Length: 128
Image 1 (cartoon, one colour):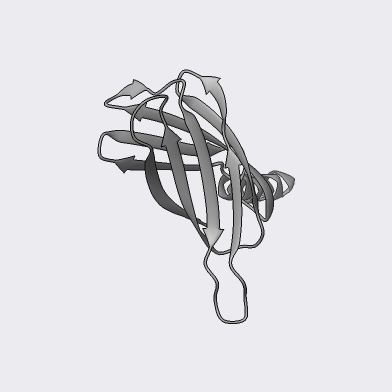
Image 2 (cartoon, one colour):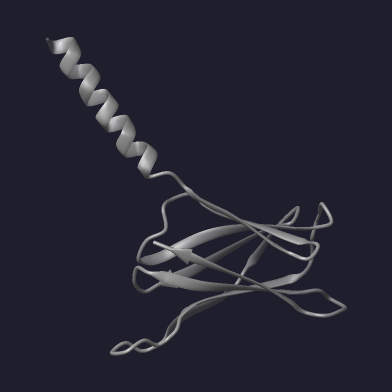
């Protein structure tokens, strides 16, 4: 009887850990691909994201990356946003921390500015 109870408890606990998986999302725009990931589930407050940016399959290095997360105004609620510049970790990886004020669907704009050439914007959304 104790073994059955232990197995059921282990399965329930394991299922709860599966639901708390890390966040990942991949976004493509023309020849640029951005893989967005987080070590923990996105929630209200401070969230750290790792952006893995590549173009035509090669890592993009030495560019300025900034991210803007925003939720447009709705009836009875003002617009909200969080902006931050990403830190270059090397090998096409960038780290950014955003403050997400509440749950819901947030628009995410990633701005990539090379030393020379045109600035590009990649748009996606996150929902929690």
